[in-house]
Image (cartoon, rainbow, N blue to C red; front, side, top):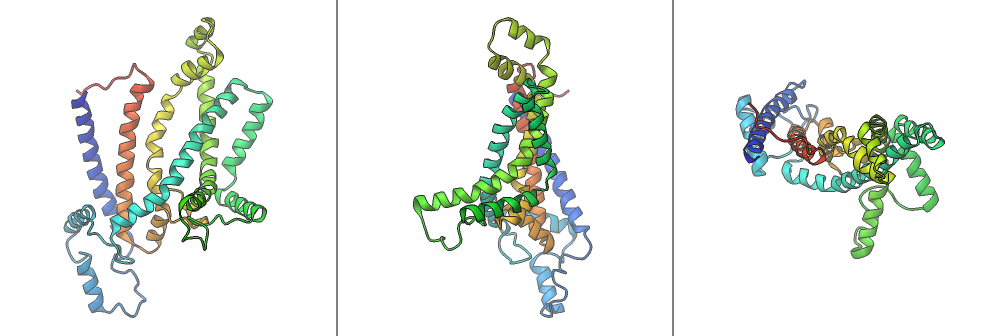
Length: 323
């Protein structure tokens, strides 16, 4: 078991290495030189530009730039083109800001999508199933930014409260319980909006998967044994239909890096997704490449976690040493 895990980990490290090389090279294929951060600025004289290139190792060969880039990234010496601030602390700070949205949104998606999908499958073609289908497809079709603006206008005009940013403007100095409640309130709205599309899409997957297994032989056998309906549905049918959703964990974890650019921009939330969007606009290559690298790392960790969870969901699956 341990040797197999080590073998899988070694393969993923090699995959991560090739991803780092490709992402570094692809970013450098963008039009223009990284040193052309602001060519219209009169302060960027040739002498200043040369010092700038040396400070960010842009005067060295490409392979040397690659080595120095990741060495400085992991040692905390890599700095942003935009403000010369260390990249790693900036990424960590923005990740902590995005973490509450990610956690609350994920909990909402998985807590509401599964009961909704199971209920729709059990009551197939009923009024509940039909009205749920209409609402689900409406949530999928309505653009997120449009729904966000409508909700902001409704909440502000109805309750006369602030919903923009991490905390209420003018109350930055408050502490204790009031600060906790203020921060919690500001997390609610963007988290709910970020989870609406996920709930709609995942509930459809759950419904279709449950419809495939609900009439299977083992489900009919469980009912014949006299088991109650909840045990039949959630222990036998749902557990055997969970395998496709375990794979989705590999796609959820990188969401911590990607975040929701639209939601974070509308709510002025200083998260990691907004940081990446601003870095692309300002051609801040250290931020962009670092975000690509950490997103790849989280994706590989997600695939490893999903492989391990396969064994928990389906005991018939076992890790076997590759030939």
